[in-house]
Length: 278
View 1 (cartoon, rainbow, N blue to C red):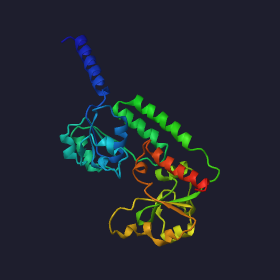
View 2 (cartoon, rainbow, N blue to C red; view 1 turned 90 degrees about the vertical axis):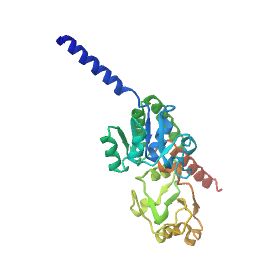
View 3 (tube, helix red, strand yellow; view 1 turned 60 degrees about the horizontal axis):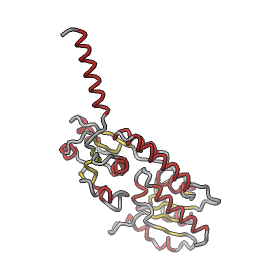
View 4 (cartoon, helix red, strand yellow; view 1 turned 180 degrees about the vertical axis):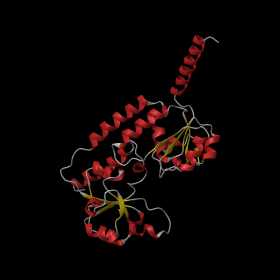
């Protein structure tokens, strides 16, 4: 073969290879609840072929109804491999052994870090848009998210003091997604008064002494675990000027997606009702 023809063939193969790489993935599998949610928001019809089992759980998944049209997987490498994906979506906390095995088998894996702030949400949408070849749809949803967030985040005249309270007396500070949701809704997080910025334990006695105006409780799951006792302790009911609300910290709070706007909206409505004396 003449050198000129060899060069032409090499160039043609390179162009064909680049074009193939540029094609959006056709069979996408998600093995993480939060990548499930992002993919469900952005994927083209038929592009997402499997989601994690938690995607069908109404307590954990904000998009469980949409997810029910898609088969689930147990997030194991062997099971995922048999689905013949050309892209796997995982979290940074997905088992390294699973990710390594899939990559060793030649399957691309895109990993997503959990959102720690509201500003992380556009970044995660953009990352998913690039991974799925859905950049335009991601840009549209980012713009809509920013606009609605701005409309909901009008500065309040006064920020009521609030606490987030979960099993094991756990709370979250301002440098967390839940803390950012609380702040955007117009509340001041009492965790800051204790020096907690991310997450940590807030003993029930300390919570009572702080006497926040609102306590937002996590879900109290059925069972006999003593870790849940602080959520129903009589001391909370004895706080005469504290409003205790529950079930606000579930599926809309878990993942960094535009669905956190639902949580912000409900908390903002609560603040406005307090201002109106209701």
